[in-house]
Amino acid sequence: MDALSANEAKTQFGDMLLKAQRAPVQINKNGKPVAVVISMDEYESIEALKLRFLQLRAVEAKIAIKGGNTVDGESFFDSLESGQYD
Image (cartoon, rainbow, N blue to C red):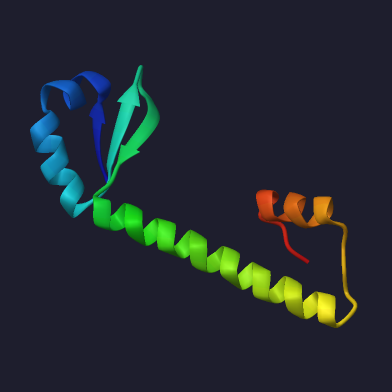
């Protein structure tokens, strides 16, 4: 992944946008990564994956409910937020 300082990203904005069409571009501030610029296609792919994941979790929850295997809502959402699943 290409990396640019925040100042480079500002002064080379057009070039950065062209690079982001091919691969993510990391933006660093004070030597630390603070952002990543990605193409719209990549962003839409990530959002579609997130939606598909949530749809799958909803289907799994419905199956668990039908089987009598339930947890309270707070525990379900806590596991969803943390990424830890039983």
